[in-house]
Image 1 (cartoon, rainbow, N blue to C red):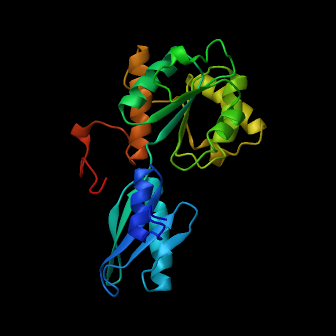
Image 2 (image 1 turned 90 degrees about the horizontal axis):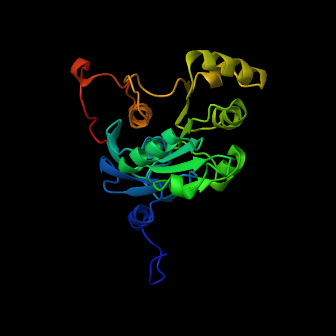
Length: 261
């Protein structure tokens, strides 16, 4: 409702979502019957407004759902009809398990890059606010309680597991790999990854779920310092979020920047 008590139009509700850093998409007919008609699509699949055609609305809702989570806006053609799907979304969240030095540097870089970082570790001596000034919140507890405190895992969340402790690593990964998270990465050598794989398979994680795991975490930058390691990790997260491999632009073909990104 608006301030005067009147119901907001789909466009007005979309503006409210944007102001409140919510997530949703406004679909507008740019060409074809019912030119200018608008429909708002929310994260739960509910809609407001009409495009004047139920079949078209179902198609539009599918595109809207995909794009609001892919976090981009674009035009979509369906036959002779041209739709524009305008998506709004909050800053992406990065959840870091393991209150280690690398985590502090990763928080700083994530914050600088426009992300909202969180740190979690059941060891209260390490999981202190003063050690992670750039973290939105520092959780002292096990992964299940952290995810609960964050309201669950959504399709835009990225998760980095840095603890080097099998008990803590596995507790986070068992949940993360079965979730809709956009990215799940874990630190450790190739030998450590092999042992981790065996442990997770024994816990019931499937091969398909394990394929989602980015491990060892990060891009091959030759990183040596904590800052460089954070850059390696953040670079991989951003690249995968944008559907890229993270290679050198000098060797790339096609567009450097996606239209509508």
